[in-house]
Length: 195
Length: 195
Image 1 (cartoon, chains in turn purple, orange):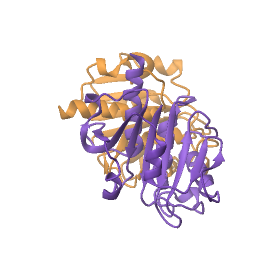
Image 2: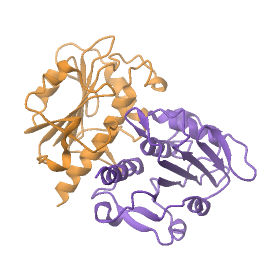
Image 3: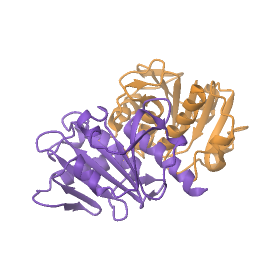
Image 4: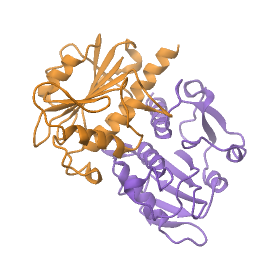
């Protein structure tokens, strides 16, 4: 299992936004949408061994987490609007205790990074940061691994304080977008799995 | 200079489509939009050493090429709609002889793959294909290199016949989307440039 936990510091926590303005009024939901796509889609297929947990911390109703389970996931096409629509649908679900399913393979609940980290049952946790160790120089434990990534704002200090024993890694010499980092991590793991 | 030539076999050649339906009525313009984003955007920056040439072969007015020059490029944000809007604007330009500029750093003209290959002045040409040699096992000549990629339909036989001495490479063990391949190629070149 490969797990990606992505923190959206300004990401809207209501489903009232339009898919035409994900970068604006939705608080950079476009970033999270691209992360979902990068995590799951390959050419004509979905990565069934992957989970994504989006941590949404923006107004008006934070925090919420939306969890995508590749084993069950449906209705995800490669375009950004498709992932955005799944996120929006999840944010329209009324929450009380526990998680609720919004579409097949997509679950939403009232929770933040601490709970997202509890969901993660990986044996090793990596935190993506430009000053980390090169991913090619670490042992990424291909079978059961989780990665924590920030959005365009990185990861705030109070969040990094919760990461415990996470190892800090980077994917290359240039600071990239979160979805690009996910593509690069998958590639490293794909290569390890195929040898 | 890094150059990417991407063939969109069904990509619309008129700017009449809406940005809400790039995967449908626009003939998978969404694929080309994501390729433009992957080729140019890094975290809060644009790759100035990169050029992209989109070869659009769909109805109603093929062929057209749209060339993005990173050195001059403006108005490109990371969301898919942003790149889609630049493509649509280019497709709305009336063509006669030669190329015309639609926005800063974006040029359009009546031409196909043969002309796109002529534009490319790279010393080495690579063709991305799942059965190619691993990119990590070739010398990608970091300073002046071009890559040819197909869309979701790959590259048709009549196109591959025009590639001449292009070396066939792949980016990993799994067949990925074109934009993901571009992200992976950039990473390989970034690593070579930083050593």
